[in-house]
Image (tube, rainbow, N blue to C red; front, side, top):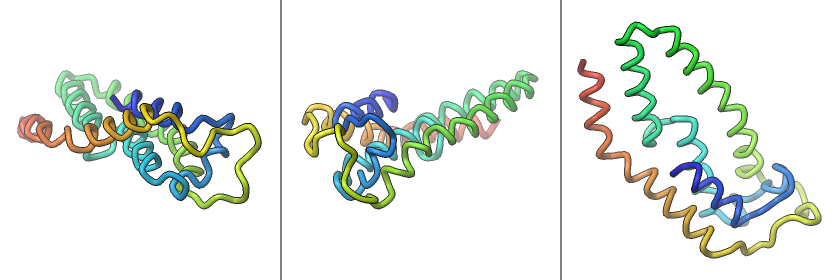
Length: 140
């Protein structure tokens, strides 16, 4: 779901480079909010569903004696921050001037915007039932 939401933002606001997203939060705040929720969901930050899934998998691997696998997965998660923050920082920063030539139109396809918003809402609100699972996992 989070990948779908991130790609929906890309379809709604297509650019040739990451700098083209500079100032997205000012131009299209709801689209920037959807992008932020989706990318932080991909990293696995709370309160997203990916966090609940990673916590469950990491706990199962740890309990199974695969501590090395938990370390590798945690390092991979930290490394993924670099890639996702490279997209978020320009999107949430102020624009430095006019958008680069050949970038997306100010109004993207409405379907892509709707998909991005729906996925962000599902990703944010749909995790509350998972907290019971997380609580049961932590009680082991």
